[in-house]
Image (tube, rainbow, N blue to C red; front, top):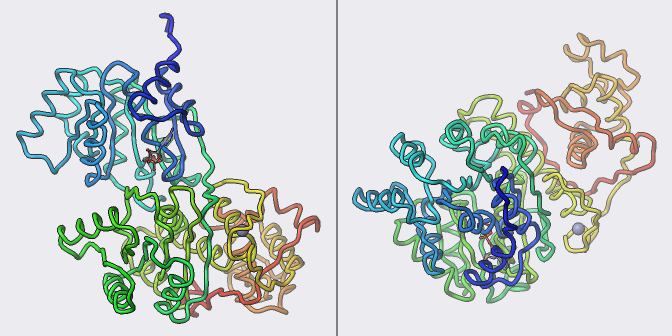
Length: 525
Ligand code: ADP
Ligand code: ZN
C-alpha cells in the first residue's frame, strides 16, 4: 500500500484506556493489535484467560468496517455482546437463538455500517445469504475464535469450521486472525491450511500458569480423598469438580452436601433453568463448588476459582489444560488436583475402542490418552511435561507440583531408555510401542521374524524386565520428547535422543508407577 499508514498504536493505547480501562497491553497483545490493524493475518496461540478477545476487538475498532468474529460458543455470544455494548461498542450477534425479526434488525444494522463488531456462529456465517451480505458491506477483519475447531485432531472438532475455507477464497483481501488456546503441531497445521494463514505472523504465548499447583494421586476412595483435600486446603473456596458421568456428578454433589460442603451439580441432562441457576450461583457466590461434566466451564470467567479437581481422567492433555486452567485466573495460588486409577484407564480405553470414529481418529485419540497417562505417571516435574506437550521448553523443575514438592522414589532407567531408543533406531524409526517391546523382550512374533528384527543386536536385550516396564519406558520417552510418534504411530528417535544415548542425560521412572496393566487383547492390537 502506498498511502502513508499512520502508526495505529497511539490510538490503540488511547482506546485501551478509554474503553476497557486498561493501562497497558498484556504480553504480545500490543504486537498482535498492530499486526492486525495494519491489515496483516495472524495466528494467536494464547492460553485461556490470556486476553485473546482484545486482540480482535481493538483492531475491529481501529480498522474501518465491521470486525466479524466467528465463534462456536453460541451460549456466550450474548454475554460478550452485552459486555461490549456496556463499554459503548456497537456490537451484535447472529446465531440460531435469534428470532427472525431480530436477525433482520442485525442484518439491517450491518448493511447500514452501524456495527463495530459482529459475532456470528460458523453455520450462520456460511449461509449464502450471510456471505452475500458480507460481500456488500465493509468488513474490517475476520476473527476466528476457538480456531482449533477446524481440526479433527483437536478435542473439539466442528465440521462447519472447515467450511471457513470460504473466507480466504471469497474475502482474500480482508485480514484474518485465528485464535486458540489449544493447538499441538498438527492442529496448528490444520488451522494454517484451512484458513490459508501460511504467510501469517504467529504469536505464541507461554502456556505456563505458575500459580496453579498440579497434583495427581492414585485413586483410592475418590469422594473421601476429595473431601479431605477440600477440608485441608480449600475450605470455603470456590471450586470445580469434574466427573465423567452425569450420575457421578449427581452423587458427588449430593455426597458433598451431606458432608456439609456447599455444592451443586451441573450436566447436560439438567434443565436449562437448573443449569443457569447453578452457573449464576457459581459466578456470584463466594464458596460454591460445582460438580460437573466437561459441559461446564466453556467461557466461564470467574477469577477466583481456587481449585479444579478431576475425579475421572480428562480426555486429553488439551482437555486437562483447559479444565485446570479455570482455576486461579486472578493469579493467586490455586490447585489442580486429580485422582486416577486403573478402572478409569480401562473405561476410557473401552469408550475409545467402541466409538464409531474413523480408525485414524481413534489412533490419534489413543495417542492423546497415552500422553495424558504419561503425565499422570510422571517422575519429573509435571509442569515441564504439560508445557512440553504444548511444544514449550520449560527449564524447570517448577517447585510447584507434587513431583517437585514431594519427589517420588525413582529408579535410574537410563540403560533401559538407551535400549529402547536403539531398538527404535535400528528397526528404522517406524514401529510402534508394541513391536519395539517385542524386540526388546526377544519375542519371535510373526512380524519380528518377517522384518528380521530377531537379528538385531537389540533383540532380547531387555528380557530382564517385563512388558509393563517397557511400555512405561517407551511412554516416558515419548512424553519427554526423546521419541516422537510419526505416521501410523511409529516411534522415531528425535534429536534430543542423542544426549541420552551418549549418556549425557539420565532418565528416572517412578517406582510407584501407576502404569496400568493393559488387557491381553488391547496389548495385541
Ligand atoms: P481469553 O479469551 O484468552 O480466555 P479474555 O480475552 O477473556 O481471555 O481475557 C481474560 C481476562 O483478562 C479478562 O478478564 C480481561 O478483561 C482481562 N484482560 C485482557 N487484556 C487485559 C489487559 N491488557 N490488561 C488487563 N486485563 C486484561
Ligand atoms: Zn514441578
